Image (cartoon, rainbow, N blue to C red; front, top):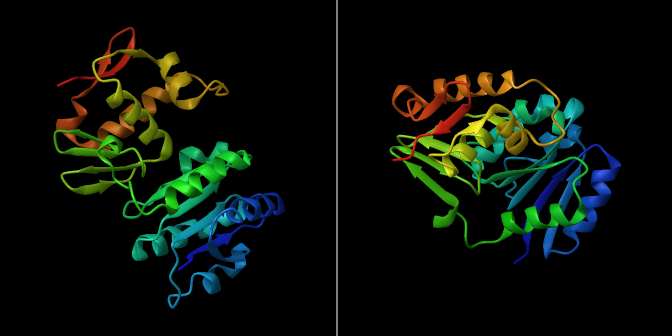
Length: 223
């Protein structure tokens, strides 16, 4: 039986790109604009993947789309603007991923393929465990003591980068390069702000693992 995909976007460039991408898969497609969200995501329908262009005015409907995906445990792929990455809250209960607007057709195809495949989800190599914290690298989700923690994408990216390189100190400039990317032109103080937010969300015990190295930067203390 074919898998069912719902595609929601307002821009013609993404509509055309994902039309080409989805044509390479054996799927049934329901497509429409953001104003058709209530109809496309009717409670009577079930889907194997929702692709949602979370850009411009569509951001105002993002919370409801995420809620629907979470309620149905339906995988959700977001199309986002690079400037909005820090504002995006990924779903905490369902498989989720994102592509940046303007990503190549090849990258979009790879993301869709990963989310549609029935095996390999939650593979051991995708899981990082530290004390009572679990980081799922495949779904961009973090749990502490079994409870999901809401991180913005950049908070998650910074935390997972430091945990994956436990015991190594990184300067603020190095973190800006590795996490924010070479195109980021803001000041290094943004790293301090994100570290404070991460510590607050992790709680006092785990927060101690995210250490400040005076005059240098930050590290995640190895066990």
